[in-house]
Image (cartoon, rainbow, N blue to C red; front, side, top):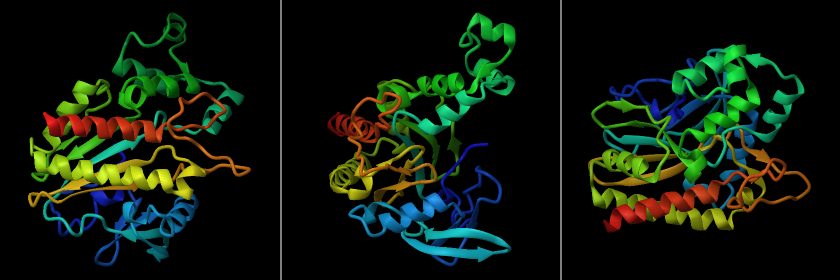
Length: 289
């Protein structure tokens, strides 16, 4: 199952080509111009703060908590409503997609995981050590760290999660998209070679970086598992938003992050700005070429 932003599935009746490929029951269409995402207190707190922060133009509008059919949801802006048959890309930002505390917890009770071993050999049969092959299992911390080395998460500080095009075709086969040239080919395909769309995305990304460097929220939070949502349509309108804050964690004791410093366990650096710098450089190169 591929985890997609709720915005990818928003207003299915207006976008018949869109299919839900995430966790069943997590998302529902709200009133016109709104989307419902299963309630997460962490995401609620982040969206409330972000809607008061300088990053407000780069996040979905937040409209509080609602109840529907016995479930509780965060209600937010439908980012697709202004587009006509949009193409959509989800880019996971940062150098890791797990929290430091997840590593700590996994080490407290080490357990060989057969399911993770099988996932590992499905991608690369040579990845497990000889001992892991004999045990037919790997420890969770080992799997978590190995998984990040497969894609551009490790090499560039971001990775493409999935792309849906205006014609309804979908591509989520980016697990081994690791190198700059591979990323550029995927982006070229995403915009169908349209330089104007590339320029509009580049402008938006540069504006986002400026606001991130000013933002109090950004300084005070470890942002893990969050994505940038890219959306454009045939009019060449192109926008980028920050989404998915379920793993975003506020730092203790007025600690702040640089977001470019390499991650070492304990410093909580997430590499978000390093990844954004690389993304901007790639878009700049593509526009010039």
